[in-house]
Length: 76
Image (cartoon, rainbow, N blue to C red; front, side):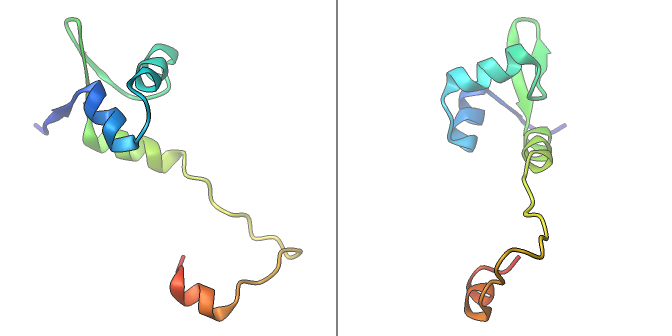
């Protein structure tokens, strides 16, 4: 079984306030584990949740093309 994270550890990992993590839990937004009265988070679930909320740029023909030098510096 993987090590579980506390709300504080999740807030530090995601660089958000701990109150934001508790808000997400209250709203049912972020996956969590409840052990009696303790909230814990599986690290893999948190990363999967973040990945599912990652916005991908749309491939629109009206957008300007990225210069080759920027493509090398910031590959997709």
